[in-house]
Length: 67
Image (cartoon, rainbow, N blue to C red; front, side, top):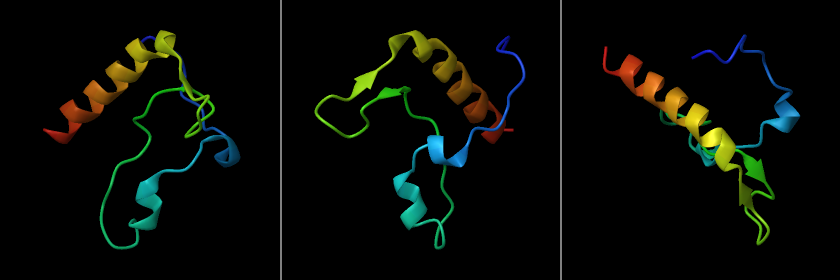
């Protein structure tokens, strides 16, 4: 994707997905959401400059799941 090396993030900085509550019981996918700040508050924002790369990431996942 031309984004350079993928490095792991600090788990404390990655946020949490609602799927975590059901993960012991079902398969699920998390981490496809937007990037921004103020998650789940009245001041939540979405950084539209990251949308192109996030869309590419989701498209690659969908492609790989269909193979």
